[in-house]
Length: 450
Image (cartoon, rainbow, N blue to C red; front, side, top):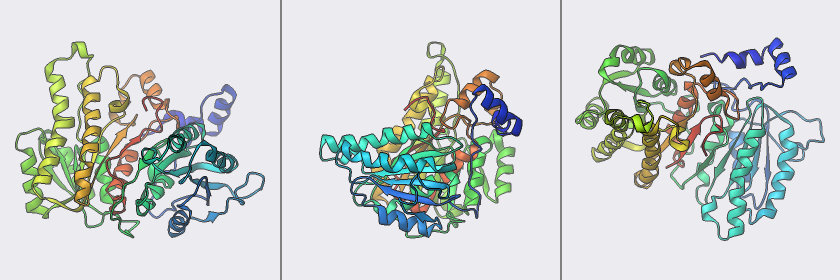
C-alpha cells in the first residue's frame, strides 16, 4: 500500500518543501527483487580487536558477488566510489579501549555510505565474556549499532551479529540477509548465532525449493504475503485459515499454486488434524509459520473474560499445542524450521492491548525455551516481531494515530507485509540453521520498546 507522505517527500516539489520546513524525508526503501544484486555498490570490511572473522567475511562477500574494498580505499579523505555496505569485525575486543578502532574505521566509512546502504557489526556475545571489561566492550556494540541506525538516513540500516566460538559457519546467512533488500525494514537489531550443522550452499533464487511449508492465518494481510513470498522462494505452501475465510483462503492458495486447509486452530482436535493431514498428503513438513492472530482491544479494567481468553487461545495456546503435536507426531522433517509471529507490543506493551501484548510476549518466551529441544533435532524455532505494518486494517485507523505510528522509527515510515514475509522466509532457509531461539523485530527500529 502506498505511503502518501514518503511519495510526496521524495518528489521534486516535496523535497523542496520538506527541506525548507525542516520536515523528515523518509528514504525509498530498497526491497528484494529476485535476480537482483545483494548490494548496490561495494562493501568495505574493517576490524576492531582481534577480528577473527575477516577472512570469513571476505569469502562470503565474494561468493555473493559483492566487490570488497580495503579499509584504506574507504577513507573519507579520498574521492572513491560510494559504499553499499560498511562491515566491522569487532570480535576479540578485550575492553572499551579497543572500541577506538571501531570509531576510527566507521566514522569516515559511513560518510561514504550510499542511500539504502548497510552497516553490519559482528562481535562476540557479551554473555560469554571472561571479564567485566570484556563484557562491557562487547555490550557496547549493541549501543553502537542501535545509535548508528538512528543516525543513518535515506533508507540505510545498521544491525549486529553476535558470533560465539564455534558458530562461524552460520555467519553467511544473517550477513547476506542484513545486506540485502530482504531486510529493508529491519534496523537496529542483533542476532546471536549458535553452533549448528549449516549447509555449505543453497539455491539463491529458490532457497525453499522442494519444501512443504504451513502458513496459518494465510487468507489475508500479512499471512497472504508470507504465503506468496514462501511460494516465490520455491516451497509448496499449505495455506491454513478458519472456514469463514474459505473463499479468500482458496484464492491465495490458487494464486501461488499451493493448497488450502480450512482449520480452526483453536479447536480441540486441530493439532491432530493438522498432523494427520501433513502425514497423509505430504509425508511430513519442513516449515511451520505460526502467523494466525487476533486482537480484542479494551482497557484491562473493562476487558471481559471472553476477550482475554479468545486472544490467548489463538495467539499463544494454539501455537503451543500445534508445535507440541508436531514434535510428538514425528512429522517434522530433518532440518525443520518453526517461525512464530510475535509483535512489538509483546516487547514494549501497548495501551488497551494487555491481552494481545501478553500473548505476544508469551510467544517470545516459548521460542526461547524450545530452542534447545529443536537444536537437538537439528531444527530451529524463532520469532519475528512486527512493528507498524501498513495493511488494510491500519488504513482504517484515524489519520493522526496512523501517521504517528508509522513515523516513530528510524526509517520514518511504516513497513509493508512483504517486510515481515521476507524475514520469515530468511529464517526458514536451510542455511539459517545457526539462528535459533531468536526474536527479530521488523519495525524500522521503532522508538517504542527495547
